Image 1 (cartoon, rainbow over the protein chains, first blue to last red):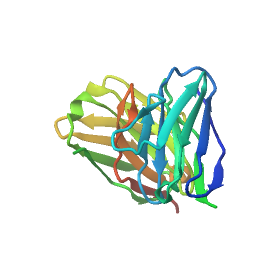
Image 2 (image 1 turned 30 degrees about the horizontal axis):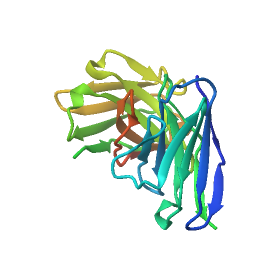
Image 3 (image 1 turned 30 degrees about the vertical axis):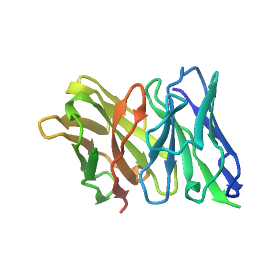
Length: 107
Length: 118
C-alpha cells in the first residue's frame, strides 16, 4: 500500500501569508495526486488534480507542484475563507490513500 | 449539475448491519467508477471501497474487506454499501463520490452518518 505522509498536521497563519503543505508518497505515484479542502461539517472540495491542475472555479492563489514523490500545495496569499483542513489523495493504485490532513488556523 | 444524495445511515448496535444508498444525478452514472469514503468523528478521510463501471471489479480497504459489499444499480443511478458485522470503529460519516483514474474525486455527496454503539 502507498502511504501518504502529510506535513505539517497543523499550522497557524495570518491573512496574506504564503502557506505550503507537503505530502510525501512512500513510492512513485506519477502525478496521480489531488488536494482537497474541507470545512467543518462539509464535504471535501477538490482544489487540485493531477498534482498541479487547478480545479475549475478554484482561485488562482492555490497551486500544486511535484518533485519526485514529494507534492506541495501552496496558497500564495491566505484569505479568511481558506481557513480549513487540507488533504492530499493518491489515486495511482488501490487502496486509494489520503494524507493525514493539515489544519490551517488563524494566527 | 452533479448531485449525490446519501441515505441509510443511523444508529446500529455492534455486530449489526446497515445498507447505505447514494442516489446520483447530473452525469452519466453508468460510465463512472463509484466509491465510498468515510470520516470518523474528528479524524481524517478514509477510503472504503470502489466499484468499476458495469460492476466488473470491486476494491475494498483491508479494514472492511469481508464485511462490506459495494454494488450499483445503473438503471436507478444508485450506489450501495451493504455493511455487516459493524464495529465501533466503523462510526463515521460516509460519503459517495464518482471516481476518475486521471483526476480522483471531483464531486462529493453531503454524507450520511453511521453510529455503531450499544
